[in-house]
Amino acid sequence: MSALLVLALTVPLIGLVPLLLLGPRAGERAALLFLVLGSGVSIAVGVVVVRTGHALEYFIAGLAPPLGIGLRADGFSAAMMGMCAVVLPLTAFYAMRAPGAPAARMPGAFFMLLLALSSALNLAFTAQDLFTLYVALELLTFAAVPLVCLDGKPGQLSAALTYLLFALFGSVLYLLGAVLIYGLFGTLDLAHISAALAKAPPGWSFGAALALMSAGLMAKAALFPLHLWLPAAHSGAPPAASTVLSAVVIKAPLFLLVRLWADLAPEPMAQAAAPLLAACGAGAILFCGVVTLAQERLKLLIAYSTAAQIGYLCLMFPLVAGTVPYWSALAWTGGTLHLASHAFSKAAMFMAAGLLAEVIGHDRLSGLRGAARVAPLSIAAFGIGGLSLMGLPPAGGFVAKVMLLTAALHQGAWWIALVVLAGGLLAGAYVLRVVVLALQRPDGDLPPQRECGWRAGIALALACGAVALGFLPLAPLGFLSIGRPIAWEGLAP
Figure 1 (cartoon, rainbow, N blue to C red):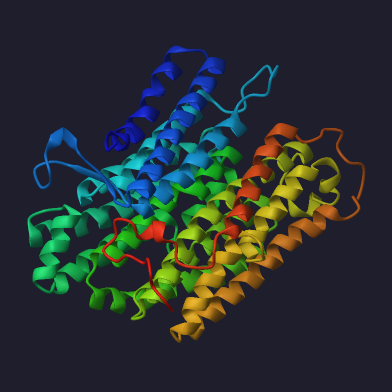
Figure 2 (spheres, helix red, strand yellow; figure 1 turned 90 degrees about the vertical axis):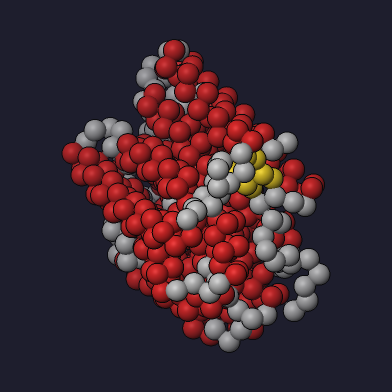
């Protein structure tokens, strides 16, 4: 079963071959087929982890680290792989040409990049040494940057260049931190580093290495205050490209940020860094939330909302580093659930924005009056996806925010609770602004074109997926603790 980890990396890459050999229409279908196969492998990894209750491991060429390269999927990794397994195939289906249409919606390069993203994301979620993780981040960057400028417009090229510069800046910082760690321990394998840290307390140089790597990951994830590349990248990118950028691409550096501070860093160091990370998260939620309210374009509104919403993950760091295991586990579950519900809701909202722009001809909020009459499913997808951002029941974002709020209140972190509540109010303001405009009486004649029903159905399905996550129990999920140093089963508050 450990070979499933290799298949998760290679199946999407095999799908590149038919794309190069077949025509555009057949290539799209082949890409969708291999994305579905890859998703099946990712889901199978999660099933094996649940059934065995242990992390799934594979050593390339049978050589264990430090001689070889190890792949490992624990509960957290499997959850992230499962999230991507849902979003990526549906995005490919959304981007395919309509039956009988003379031209493709997206160039063949889009589907190639989507397959490359799938492989790079799975590598980022399973690699067990810092250099392989660096390779995964670089593969992710060079597959994601071209998505921004697929149409070749001047504004897109400028946004893609800005994204590339931020990503390369982050890569340099990450690599400098990895070099420092190699100088300290003589290895980059996470398990060997953890074993060395358990024997002797780390010095200031290890803290500096983690700080450099964290800054690099924040730049790649567009976490405040290094979020400046994200709005411009989203505003000009095709809707399908914005979907994957917001829903899954930025999740990989956030995932690694959690790994560094929750699993690798010693507890005293993690407790010292947690308030700084949480402050960045609070800045993202409040500052970017206010800026979102001022946007006059729908895609820019969703983009700034993305920069705001990822801040919730950073709020969990002080809570995870708390002294009561139950509340730490609850905060960890809330942060993970927020990542998944955010992926589904943002994918739905960007898809809906693309359909609205096709019907109306633009994405200016001033021209959205009456949009619900020509694109009812798209407006429904946007509104239902927004439920999760607002934190209203029964959406997954509601359960995630309740977990974070509960953990914060029981650990005395009242300011985190206030930030969570303020972020929900800001999200409600900008989501309702769009929905209310769309439900108003139109200023003039509506366009004769109507939304593409099956594509709007994909957006609506993803939005409903974000709601479905809200039916998970309000308790720590033992699945997420599989393969981690601390097990959560049997914990009591």
